[in-house]
Image 1 (spheres, rainbow, N blue to C red):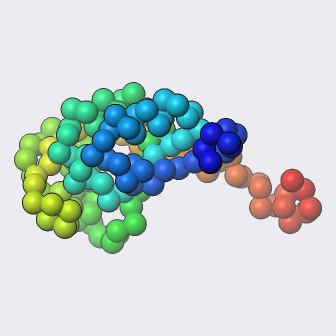
Image 2 (spheres, one colour):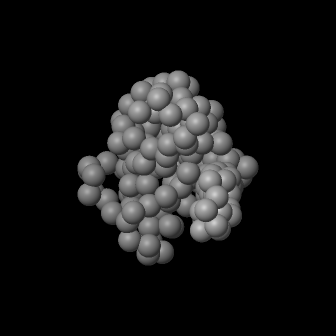
Length: 141
């Protein structure tokens, strides 16, 4: 489907549900420039492999977005901020041990990457649709 629609941007949620195999995720991103990923609910898996995850986030920083379909409580965001922004080691991920009995490690992503992941990449994607609703109401394309 992705190959048949190269002009469509696909946002693959939950790192495509493959966060244990980042080589596969990287291959997908390299093969299809119209794919972006979102990492909601995959902190547990990605935080176990911090060096590989860090490399993926740097290499594809323009195509990764923060997202969640979990509760919107402060503890969720504090956990994600700690994981993305610090170099802390061996701490509980959000809602541990829901996805496994292990600890995670902080990525300490650079500020420019964090800004893209937190909001700039989503803004760029959604800005494509500004005015689209108005055009459709007028009978436009």
